[in-house]
Image 1 (tube, rainbow, N blue to C red):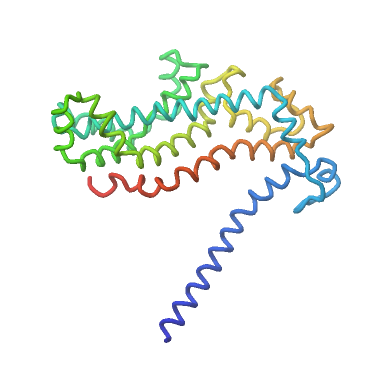
Image 2 (image 1 turned 30 degrees about the vertical axis):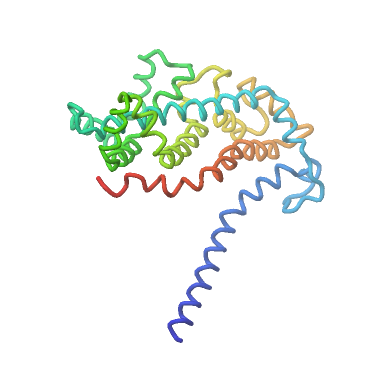
Amino acid sequence: MENQMGSKLFNVLNYTVLTIIGLVTLLPFIYVVIISFTDPTEYLTKSLVLIPEKWSLSAYEYIFSTNAFVHAMGISGILAVFGTLLSLIVTSALAYVLSRKRLKGKKFFLVAILMTMLFNPGMIPNYLLVDSLGLMDSIWALILPALTSAWYVFLMKNFYQEIPDELEEAAKMDGCSDIGVFFRIMLPISVSALAAFGLFYAVAYWNTYFSGVLYINSDSLRPLQVLLQMLLISATQMADPSVAAMLESERTVPPQVIKMAAVVISSLPIVMVYPFLQKYFVKGMMVGSVKG
């Protein structure tokens, strides 16, 4: 009886503490959403708005009426979709090749990939490499440097090694080449891993910021996070004409409300995608993590 009472008391305290932590974590996001839908007049007249008396879509209407924000969302969308597809193909193909015992120089390639995990060349060598390849001020400068991850390659390699060799041999007896085995056999059975890693790649591409600051000079190629950072730096004026035009709305919509709406819009796509991939998430992250 004492053990049962102690267990119940522990569960109550545990749930209470976790609920409080969850609310503390969630409240800032709720506040951002509320402010983004608050009427501009009410926001200007009140020092703190928790539940607005009048709701408004003026901030969202203004944001989508400006070409700069919409175009930046398009660039980030291209990065998230196209970049993720390329990253998954490269990561899974490299992992499959490294998992084959007949690969010559396998140890050399494994050590070379491992070195990229242990030693980071740094910002300046990366910048010089992108510049020497002629990728500056192009969308490829935002995709190719982040095309794959050594950690994901090793996880998928371990997963492919656990697949019986007889499955590959049976496919080859039916006339499949190595490429056919990869696309028709290996990729379909690794959907859970691809979904989990694809979510991570998509989030990374959607949140591309530092690469956009370093490698992009054109307004037409500026990703969403860079434009959002410019909005957050200044509430009244910016040296960049494209951003200054967006901030001229202070007369009708307060800059703080525009900022909150921009944060909501930039976070919404990833939040909407996650529930569809959640069922693959835990299983995918455990792929290849047991055997080495």
